[in-house]
Image 1 (tube, rainbow over the protein chains, first blue to last red):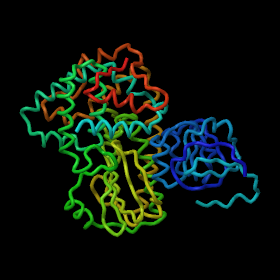
Image 2: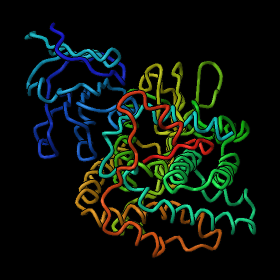
Image 3: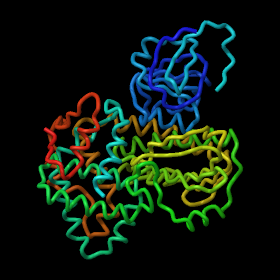
Image 4: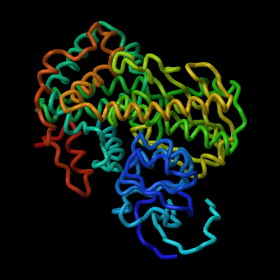
Length: 117
Length: 342
């Protein structure tokens, strides 16, 4: 595993999954259950994706920003203030991130599909 | 009293990323009509001499909402350049209403306590369903969808009018009760299309085991220690006051709010600069509707307010430092401080 980015961990839990970079609501049909939602900042048009996601990463935000608050309510890990996450992370990347430490690791593991929290 | 309130709110603001506010920031909006807003509050003070302050506080209902409004008034007092003695008098009047709503931790340092012990006992005698992972996840999703609907109905700054988290209440044996109250979800006078919404609000009562909960002066700023999904021991949901425990009904409600939250966001973000200002002004008055009307004041913004915002760009009067903003906001909020944003 390679540490590729660090942000502010705002909702605890460790998750492993596939990145889906979302630039707007039009990306909605391509979002699959348990994908990791990576976006600049979540907005209300992304609620169906947030509900499906196994974790959320945003370029900006703080401890009390919207994605931070709702992630804690849904019990999924979240990192905000991960500068340039939408550029550094690519669609289909397999990553593991820690919603407590804010560390995002890229992994090269064909047998990645074993998620835990 | 006010010093502690200021400290509590500085703590709440301190964790915010000020670049995230959409579709507008009150820091750019409120200074446009600060004098007119303070004039309205002074009118309320004058008219309140003829009513009971206990009854008046009940018209606000929501302690977190009142804390937010007090914070905004403290800011307006400074940007409007109101004299120190008058600032103190106005701020203390609003604070006296807050003292009537909050039962403990009035300033909201780490909780939002509004119920007495006997009121909690009464709630706990009602029927609760056993918690499960499935129920915990569904309630989290329902919270998320309704939260975002509120965001579109009332923007980032009047959110408290639509959501109030209340608690935690210690039930013993490592158990706590947290109440998540969604209200005013169909403000027809503000957004006409909401007249067709299936409910005006719902309340989730969550009993957690081995989970710690806290919030700051802004009650949606929640924090958990422990897992709120696995730790959900039991729950109760009321939709418009009626008990509803069928997960199927909650799923349908969640899907409805998911759809409406996106539509509402599209609607508010499609408003042009002038329309957005007028709508947000209407919003600020609307959330005081019952309060104003109890005092015999028409809730609609007056001509002076509309004139004050017309053809104006967002204000740039607030210029907090990029880092370590707490001292800046402390000076802005504290009515004793001779510090004026410029």
